Image 1: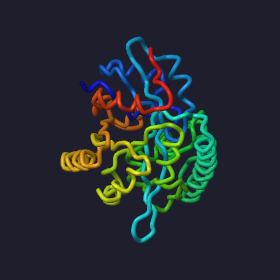
Image 2: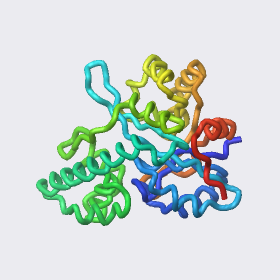
Image 3: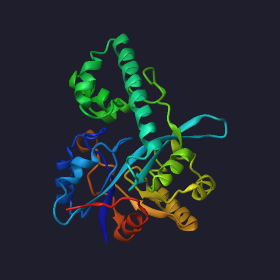
Amino acid sequence: MLTADLHTHTRYSDGTDTPQELLAAARAAGLTTVGLTDHDTADGWAETAEHVPAGMRVIPGAEFSTKHPREDGSLVSVHLLGYLFRPDDAAIVAEWHRIVDERTRRGERIVESLVAAGYPVTVERVQEIAGRSNIGRPHIARALIDAGVIGSVAAAFDGILEDGGPHHVTLRSTTLVDGIAMIAAAGGVPVIAHPRARTAADLLTADVLASLVPLGLVGLEVRHPDHDDASRAELAGIATDLGLLQTGSSDYHGANKTLRIGQERTDDAVVEEIVERGAVAPFVG
């Protein structure tokens, strides 16, 4: 059965839902299992664990920011899902502290660039929107929306805040190889998120993915809203050949994106394999 969505976000990163709202949406969609994968943080785990409804469970995790080199040495962003790792692992905690500082500085530099170009945004407003989460580009996009500059987060990412654009500031991330090793060392289950989406689509070839398996890679997010039928078929074949788990997820962000929770799902048998491999237990209602 397909009753699990293993890639979702809350206000603890760049989503708009509280953990309670996320769980309510999941239940309304008929899900029994939800993966909590906020960007580079486990801060939402405790609150989420307190509100799991009866008959549901949450697979706690995170979406790690990593980069992998092309043959020319340029670095490409690759998102890495980690499930059921020990959240107090020293290496993970240190990396996330670094990411928080890096994101804050990057956010301030982006806002400074926007202000210099005449856009009506402030660091204070972006911090207010971010609340308890790390400052990210979605929060800057929402500040631009509130100021009437642009109509949606997607439009901001395709225009004013686009990668490589005049207001782009690079975020320094750990390597994909080190990210996989870090999650595995903390007892977690590493799964590459949307490997055929965005700039990494042509980077993560079958040979590259095969090289990551001995390092601890466990799965690929095969079914994702950004993957067309050809990409799904290709990734499913690669996963089968390499003995990797195949997951499906919505990448739900609440109102920040048009994605519907549960629109892509993971087979229950795959969820059980992830649970068996993880160092910590799911949150059960």
